[in-house]
Length: 581
Image (cartoon, rainbow, N blue to C red; front, side, top):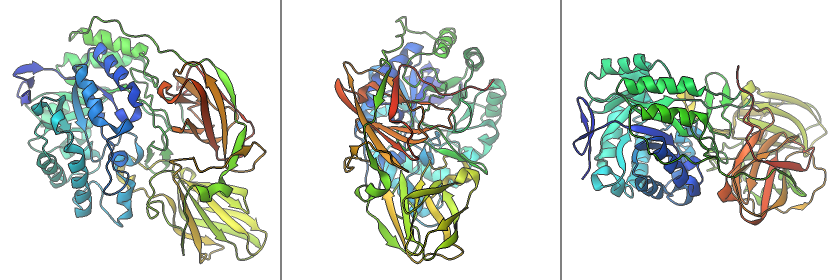
């Protein structure tokens, strides 16, 4: 059987030298009907390998549950990669970062009070063991030693930026081997973290976006023999709400790739294709201030969010051709796009009044966190009754992440974690007035010490210094909207779902724009496109062709603030925002 060997002089496969030329693409950020297209474009670029993370939190949405269906059908993705003649670098975590919700760690882990994530905490390791058992059993035929495409498996992910417990890494290695992984393992870290993030007997690799020679020298200093490999060559970057759209020029990125390859290194381009954080799956960063990541994971990658080759793709293809064979086949041009059109949303459903249709409330003497409610994504609606009239101050220990406050159904203010807000003053009309607080999980932190990121109203919640004796906490995961009762559109104050339809002769990729709308989410034919927010930079949501159908298509928008228009737009090109000069 084929086997990847780690020799002093480099990689060898079936006894022959191998330089790994890989590109990153994440199957879970791409509609499954588009996997084959993206993999073909990987081969046409001149790559011999693709890399993907595995998101534990999507595959295991609840303890004891494991999914490998639909967009999570990893075996099918691996079959398609093999059909293109591509090897695969598999990165199962358990932590993946990836600007993904919680770094891929399931939210249900956080229900274990005080659990140590990415550690030797027995509760964490037991959960990891269960995850790897469920994942790796069906993947054994896909290991290269069994004739499959997976030539190597990553151990953890940039652990040196988080900790330095080699005992933890050794436990993970033991679990991977115990569940049948008999291909080489590797770690990856940024140059300054290489000494902390590695494990003896496991290949170290480096992550970088520039100064390739210096990064490779740092790696060689710690690992005097064996392959030189950059496991993440960053060619772009991700965006956060309220900032600018980040790009990197093709010539600059291609020049750095040329230097990597001229040094004899193997490389994984991060990213060949970024894809999309569909639904609620974006992550966040918190280095003193919480910063949620946008829906698009375009990343200024070689293929844009719709999978079309960019000028950077062609520049990289020219560089690769100087160092390795590149297929003579022509590279496909851009795929067809939708004809621009306006869509009227002519029916609506108020969220606060229809919340009972979307989730079952739990009564308690305090607000319950999302994790205590057994919920991973979406919103929680908290309700209590005011005891008196007059000036009132709501104080919250921690808002995770954005709280809209309503008094008898009328909006009175917003508290945002990003702005370090904890208190809101308003006037109570009298005893019995109903206070409602709608809290959005804007994405769990995916990097650093803040990954233990519970959601909801946390800590003490008081009204004029007193804790209400009774709270109702209602989970609103919005995984399915079928229970909503829509009526003809009328002016509504506050959060509401708005629905309309449009006709298509032929599905094609497109983009949804919402000029005049403020903040919320959108679904087409029940498929969650993701979040929009007028603060930008992202101004359009990618609409994959496979989500659409000939004839009538249904569009639903949840606007969290009062809608001032009933019209949205289908466009033929993206608007990811202004770039930095």
